[in-house]
Length: 130
Image (cartoon, rainbow, N blue to C red; front, side):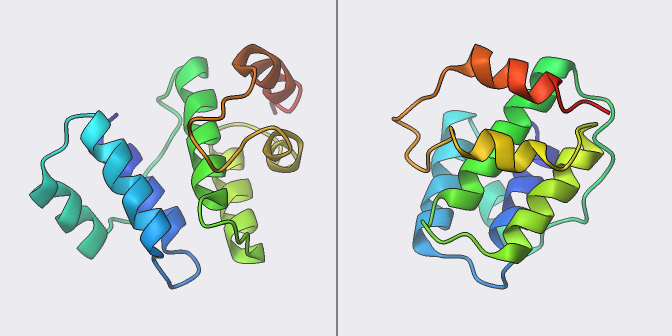
């Protein structure tokens, strides 16, 4: 995972102008799993960069990224319209129709230990490609 992907996760987590302890913990878990230094993570959280272009990602990376963004949206077990709109915006930037968020979120859980059938979800996502 690159700093730009972590940055987008931070942008999503703060879209409702609040970074909950669950969201913060999830961001730190994701960052730690990908070898990020704690100081770098703190800096990204303190000063997230505006989102850059996502069109350089492979199809698998686009799907995995969309999956993570939807999962992070659900991590605090409260889903705000602004978070849904943000996920839809990211989905469109990733080359999907915004309805992919509603379609996939039915099978993506806030708890990362509960996994869905990724191949089934990838196939659903492909049906929403622009």
